[in-house]
Amino acid sequence: SQQGEEDPQALSIQEGENATMNCSYKTSINNLQWYRQNSGRGLVHLILIRSNEREKHSGRLRVTLDTSKKSSSLLITASRAADTASYFCATDATSGSRLTFGEGTQLTVNP
Amino acid sequence: KAGVTQTPRYLIKTRGQQVTLSCSPISGHRSVSWYQQTPGQGLQFLFEYFSETQRNKGNFPGRFSGRQFSNSRSEMNVSTLELGDSALYLCASSTGNLGGYTFGSGTRLTVV
Image (cartoon, rainbow over all chains, first blue to last red; front, side, top):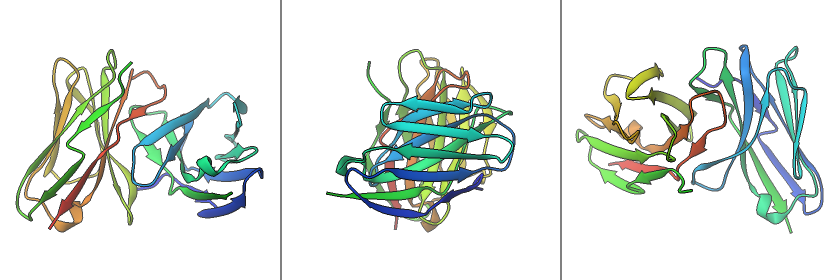
């Protein structure tokens, strides 16, 4: 079963705009990870944030984590058409050794 | 370094048959996990192997099984295939120490 929900399910923006995706989860976690999936292909690891961290940056990506609300957000700044993909959050729970994925956000960046 | 290699990329099988999928992890990674992705259920965890031992198992019937070899390569087997087993099967490798995972490109299984 899915750990939680992602919001929105779909997002369509213009190139250069920022995209924000949200993720909620249900159980205690060791870390939360974000992945990108281009149509029907494998998942690409984007960024990992540990449960004791509140914010993390990697290039144009900014991730926040609020463990009290069991939620995370992924911000992609200055989006490009190549960012068009599905984005998934995944939690690595305190029990370890497995990821539990959200339902994903389909991002479309229009040129 | 080489990524995670899954073979085959595509597979078509008939109901009732069995199938074996293969995954070669990144060199030095001892953990291999398998996931099933379908439009209806999303990404679901199947099982994880670490140093040839199944360390964790998802909520799938016994028709789904796996194993890991001493070189960390892993196989998963699905017996008595059902139409609902049609999915993208993804393998992920990691060091096993609560870090990020590297996924393969997946095997797209179609059961007819």
